[in-house]
Length: 339
Image (cartoon, rainbow, N blue to C red; front, side, top):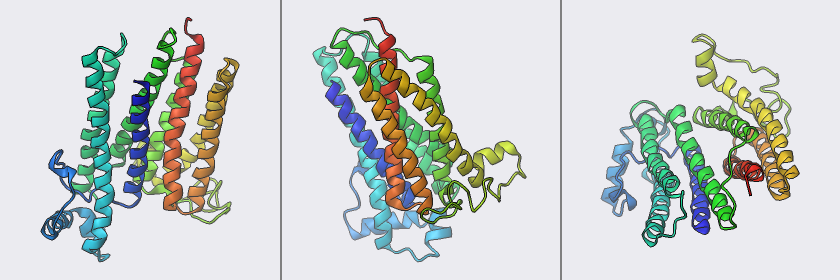
């Protein structure tokens, strides 16, 4: 069962990467319908491709942006591919989780106390699909892009599922050695909470295309740590109030995202040291490595003007950081659990 959960966790990290590519290539609304079964196959004829393209040409994204830019059917096929792969992976994850789960249940091999947890994880995966379509609909009917609030919800559900898979696998590994399940300690909860805030800010930043507002230029101080040559960004729109600015203004969201990161790092350093004192050096090193790499990639992404490979690596490392933080939080809880 542990290997099964690890495989599902790896697939979730894969779909997070594909989701990042889908967002960065503006592919998210290329498929305008949610057909759970028939949508498994892409169009298989010229007529089917033409029909899909016609549906996309009715979207605000095509009418306002890609149509005037001269998008052809060949170009449309590229963005269709990424969204189709994203949805195919989502279906695959549900199947890879659900079918073995049913098999383990029928065989009676699920340890006591885990059935409800695994049902909850399956429900999260199912909810993820519904939220994904809810997100896509916002870009089909309302705007040229999907809602950054819905994008954040979609990403957080995926990462919550990932953390749940990892935590459950670690608990199962301990159960096999006769140890109690781990609890969530206050320090770990605080660190995870701070990370959630950062992930929400990152999703908003991506949804609002705010990665480029700082400027670009490799090693340019004007793009990082400054923004367009100054510490406090110019251009923040306060006319609709502070609450609206903090949730909608790309300059302010970018600024908060880059500096809240250091609050998260400080908490992770404290968590990693606590875990190492508890005797788990591997989890401590993994957490340090993950947040260090993520910081470097975040800065490089800004300097590059959000170059696709770097931005995707940044998103992948974000998922790995969730795994590393979950492992550290579990290690801290395990050290405090009765033996």
